[in-house]
Length: 50
Image 1 (cartoon, rainbow, N blue to C red):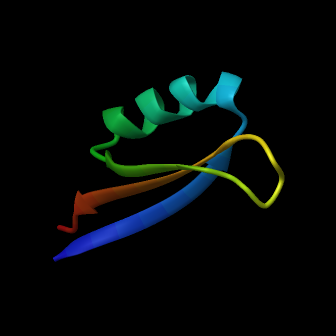
Image 2 (image 1 turned 90 degrees about the vertical axis):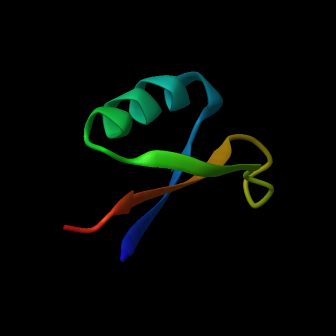
């Protein structure tokens, strides 16, 4: 079974947050523009649930 997490970021801060979650076992499965605010990213992560 997998668990998912969806986060929104400003472009400049996305890399640091994505690397931090990767260290916790999360992998990026999608990256989309955040059209609601006109800038930024919506990132979806998944990891195998223990």
